[in-house]
Length: 278
Ligand code: ADP
Ligand code: MG
Image (cartoon, rainbow, N blue to C red; front, side, top):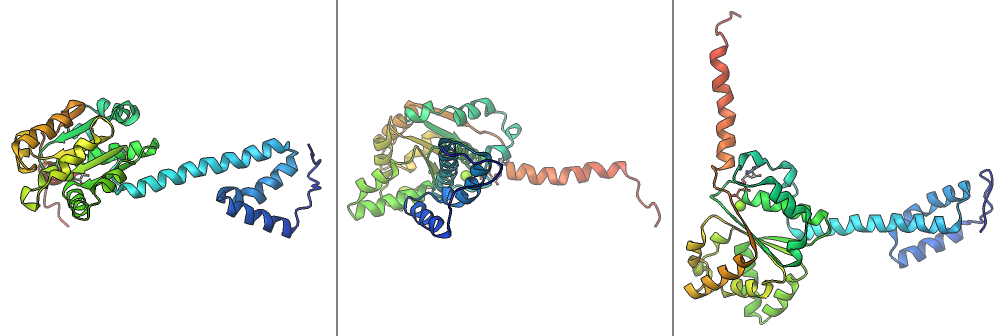
């Protein structure tokens, strides 16, 4: 093990050598090491690190950054709005939803292993999409893969795949996601075309891969979404078998926010005297 003393380096790191090293690191797809080699090697020489420490340090940086890049890729492919996080979700506005329960879903992933589902119900504007997107971001932070889609868009995509005889292939592609968020199930309509593809998706993932669904209509109205009553019952049965159901029966957050924006102005007025004379 060669060490250096007092900052005097004996390493013959010629320009030709570093260029070759750079090429090899590019070839091996180690961009972080490539970036850090000059700086870390100087530090290593100066401080007389054993060779093993130098190699470990460089590989550790590469692995850490690789994980960051992987999570970033997962976030981009997820289709999630970047700003809909749990940190910006006001749980006080939905007392019927337990923050502890949502945080437990975000932190423990045993339910994803089991392919369990999440169903969120509530009228428009109560924060269903925001809450499930926030949960999805937290899962991505923890290394999971999520796809967030409007349900009607996914149905269209699967219908097109069925027409081209690639439905099985398309369903298999969705398999790489630990969680599939189908936002706004209620907007899928039977007259869009036949929607048995949605049923096939639900069957395909049953007890294997999780689905989260937001809907502003209760199960009793899901007959609008599936081809017939028997299929509706079969779909609901599979979805609820292992599911966390969150009911968000509050007033629209947007409407309340608008009302509250007006209210302080009204409350402030009586306390102030007018015509102070200017
Ligand atoms: P829904 O999906 O139930 O129709 P959204 O999630 O789209 O409702 O919410 C409507 C808007 O209000 C969004 O901009 C969302 O970020 C915001 N919002 C709703 N509920 C909350 C909440 N509890 N805390 C913070 N923002 C919220
Ligand atoms: Mg929504």
